[in-house]
Image (cartoon, rainbow, N blue to C red):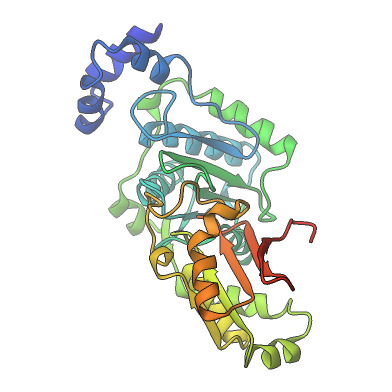
Length: 327
């Protein structure tokens, strides 16, 4: 189908919900917008896919999410790994909880058990959960540090790392083989729970993850000693790091962790920053102001899905400077 045929199909088919159709009716006559939404299928590449949220084949929505989930399900069934299940996490972005549940219910529709976190969690905890639960794969709904308009689908292998090239290529082939979105099996939440194909996970994984983190401390005694007087400013940049980062810092002995209050809670609009990227010093403007007021030497910041960290330190000249990854 060409662009206009795809557009009309989404408007007229019973396979798409009314909210999607209303969004598409609102762009009637806007050929440039219609073309951008339908000129291609959103690409599933190495590690997953990401794109602007909205209706259309070239957008992130429940239907393109279902296609990605069906591709992953097809791969797991063909490789005989589907019996081990899939762990699913999501961050603070718009539609992340909804897309995570869509993923779980497509997996359930394929007879694959989904372990879905009850609320937002960091990518590293998802990686831990995959191994801890013995899952065949993991998924995180996130667009990392991209602007607020974006979301994405990240796929992980059974070692908790992003899919290696061979597996990624196989999943991509399965995703591309899905040509009829209406044929994707989607189980209801109630049925998935009743048939034990959907398990909601939370505190029990959090506790196990914290215990595992403490085991990799290089010098716990020194941390506890420094933690009595040393002070840290931390900003989760409106993302999923807030609770777990604060918890582990507290439990290993840091008694003085100051949180940037304006950036503490989840906010899919990332309203206090141009980009929620802790690799950019601009994301630390509020954190540096707090550090100056409170005379703090070290600042940590994590991106929305909390799989990257930025560090700002005060040098001997009293200036706050960002550290590189190598440093």
